[in-house]
Length: 165
Image 1 (cartoon, helix red, strand yellow):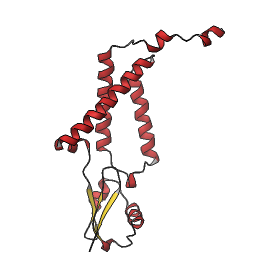
Image 2 (cartoon, rainbow, N blue to C red):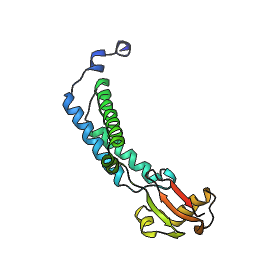
Image 3 (cartoon, rainbow, N blue to C red):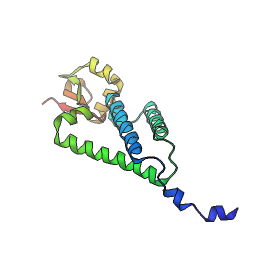
Image 4 (cartoon, one colour):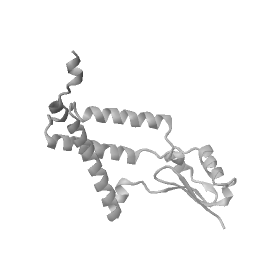
């Protein structure tokens, strides 16, 4: 019994049981689907993750790990991670070089205040409450909407403000 713990099966640990093309296809499909999901989700104020967002991300991670298949070797896991890293790098590089790709993968900033007036339709679309907006403005030492020329909710959820002169 002790020999099982003392003698790992190194061949099984690094053996590749799933075809490499299948591993690459699984990782690619999951990367694209999760990217699309994250692109269409509303942004959170200040870039924070609300509890519901964290639960959603954990569920995605769990579902993705099941969708990767039941690989048993470290090598297969490393190959999947490698494919995901490559896709992340390729999309970041492509979005840097090609504006249309940047628009596909990154959400544009959305105005939520213009000339001291709330743009409630945009706020509703991003699930941004007036209290959350005012909290963010107070953190930037703005106490009155009249001080704001324009305020945007950025892709990562932060609120950027241009003050009136």
